[in-house]
Amino acid sequence: MSSAKTQPARGMRDFLPADVRKREYVIGVIKSVYERYGFEPLETPAVENIETLMGKYGEEGNQLIFKILKRGEHEKSGEADLALRYDLTVPLARVVAQYQNELPKFFKRYQIQPVWRADRPARGRFREFYQCDVDVLGSKSMVVEAELIAAASDALVALRFKDFTIRLNHRELMDAHMSASMIEKGRRAAALVTLDKLDKIGIDGVKLELAAQGIPERSAETILYRMMNRTFLAQTGRLDLHQFSTDRPEANLQMLNFQYTSFKGLRSDPELETAASDSIEALKKIVQFTKDTSASGHIEIDPSLARGLSYYTGTIMEINVPDLPGSLGGGGRYDNLVGMFLGKDVPACGFSLGLERIIVVMSERTMFPAELVSSPADMMVTIWNEDSVGESLALATELRSAGLRVDLYPEPDKMGKQFKYASSRNIPFVLIVGDDERERGEVAIKDLKSGEQRSVRRAAVASAIRTGKN
Image (cartoon, rainbow, N blue to C red; front, side, top):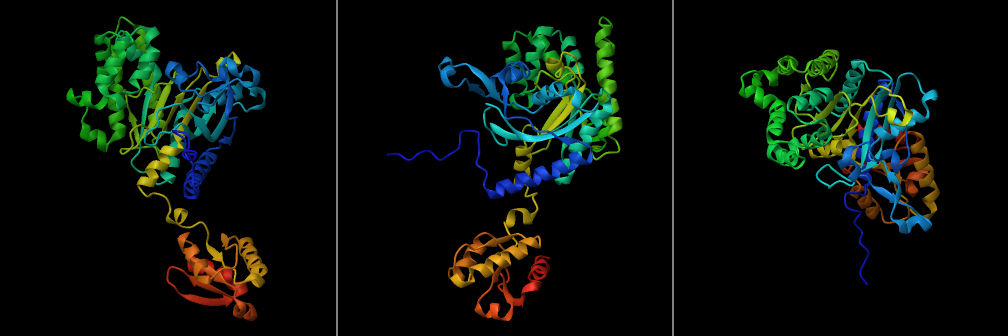
């Protein structure tokens, strides 16, 4: 008889204690930053009605939704009526529509929960993963985007990231580029999904996909030409790459001015020029509003940024680091999404940090605090013999009440075995209450790193451990 497979489902993971501690550390830092900005917590069910999710993410997104088959007598139909949530944004829109009269005028919420996507697993990409979302609903002001960018930047700085880039673009600007490239309106949603893959499949791959969608080669080359950002501008002598790397605010202004100039000559379509101009002004405001935040110096106006989700309507944002393909997070404005549930539009904008991808980079760069991953407890209390079990339990209780993390060896055993066990778990101190120690009202403390052992009065154990830790 063959043994059952013990590996989790593909794209899913088990989290051992060290993994959980890392995740909780990152969540704690992000949550603390979000709450400093006045955001409130929200949680929604893992399972949504399938009609809540379908049609919100575009055709490609629809295919990545984990559907749940009908149950009981309806199971044989093969139909699905429920699904695991794909992201936290659509459930938020549903909540706002459901509880609109109970929420404040400007609803600021953060949500840190797992989501599921039937995607192809890769480095830092899983089928079950956590998102750390922060959103503001009720305002069209660019102050909202600036606050979200600043909050995401503060979270990364608090986690000790230094080399991140916050890329910005605008959906109306993208739409104007596609219009100027003679891409038909009915093909633009699919084209955006493809353009969003530029960093994954390259220019040739994008051209092939656009051709398969029926977009003429000339239109494909034109939209790519308009999106190529720094490379194109440097080749045409309109942007100094050295200046870009040393003076990002000035380079961003150059970029936006160039973008505006590229539309100004299209006199035959004044609506196109107006839409492009308005979106460029919106991006300028965001850069201006964030100049005194931790995001200053990290922002890059990037015409190649597309973000494939179909519900974005305005600013789109993404955070990248040099040694990770893809992004650490992203988001944007989605002023029409709530209207799908409510019947009237509600201005909305949000940003999501990808917890797993952050943990991957932090682990590879050894960015976690040493004490976080080194030991599960400050000390271990041994059990001398059967008669001293109660004494060891009482000591462990006292030290836990003093705020220390205390492990208790669960049974009487040879001291050497108890020491070896503590050492295998990287526990720095072992406490012994033998017959002699009990008689003197003392506890022996052995430092497993130095090998030194000393006895202290029982009432002084907590302070002695704290002193030893420092």
